[in-house]
Image 1 (cartoon, rainbow, N blue to C red):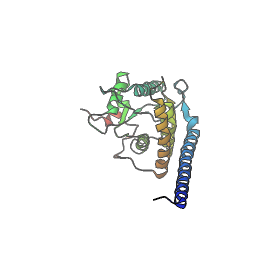
Image 2: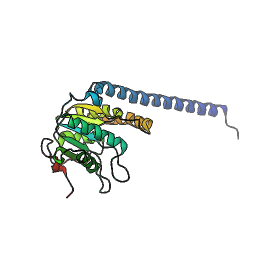
Image 3: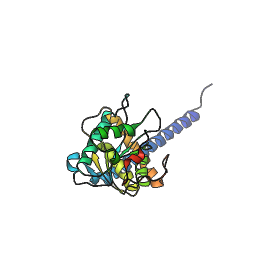
Image 4: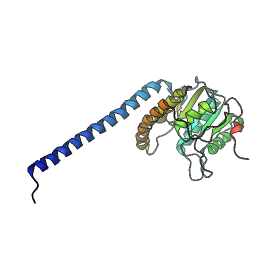
Length: 234
């Protein structure tokens, strides 16, 4: 049985329209992602500092964002760079407290105690190191910094590609914020990190607009007290 010319023409026209709509949708999404990224970077670029230019900054705390552990439970290379820059800023007097914010959602995975142990080994007193055990994302870290730790002004430490979103989130929570880049070396998989960050900026722009609550909140632990209030080990 032969297919009529009209049916073949209709099928081709339908496929053509589908391809056009698919291309238009793809271009719309790409334009939206690019636009949000350019807008967020433009809004926060003025607050990004290199370590050598950070001495004049000040805040309630230096907020170091977690980013993974080695198999032995010690900080990853990228996280060690963040910690080294954050500790150096603390010793320069940028802020009187360190706030380690990371993932401690499982007994077997504990970023924040590893971060605190690292800082103590570098000579920072335990009482000056707070831990946010539920900083599961950049957005949640900033939300909790304001609501739980009652920070009003923060100096965020993370790699440069990540700082724009971190500062944007902090400001969206009502805090004054600046950031210090911890790019002390080149990192493997940086292109992957950049691509993921482009999408994360769009997600966080929406979350900040809606103010979605984090997974966990709780009682306030003011940053001007003792960091030992966040200790969970005997």
